[in-house]
Amino acid sequence: MALQHARSGEPLDVQPFGAALPGQKTTALFKSAQLEVMRLVLMAGKALPPHQMPGEVTIQCIEGELDVTVAGESHRLAAGQLLFLEGGTPHGVVALRDASALVTLVLPQP
View 1 (cartoon, rainbow, N blue to C red):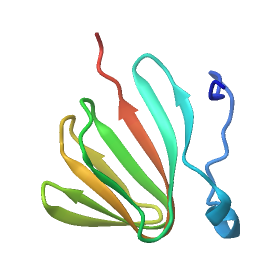
View 2: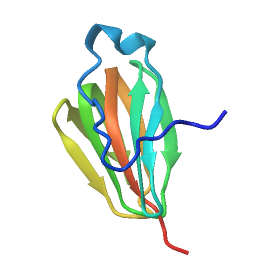
View 3: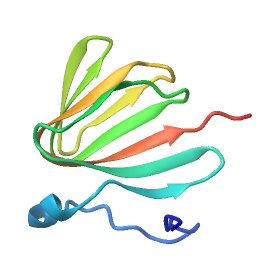
């Protein structure tokens, strides 16, 4: 089954999930030729292992608290904070508290 992505001009709700957060899953909100935006959901203690993306990345914490490790240095993100990563930067993410975030990926051009 193909994922449903937002169409150009279609508003999306990215408010905190609040009490409904534990029942949510990570979803792709939209993808174009140059950009992909996802709503990341991680429960406390869960992690994305260290990885890197070829293009630039932003992680904007919507709710909860995340720990993003960048080149061995820990950065805590609380609701309302955003972290920018240059393309190719190794990073990992751990939820310190149940959390959701907007993750924006700049996709490499062929």
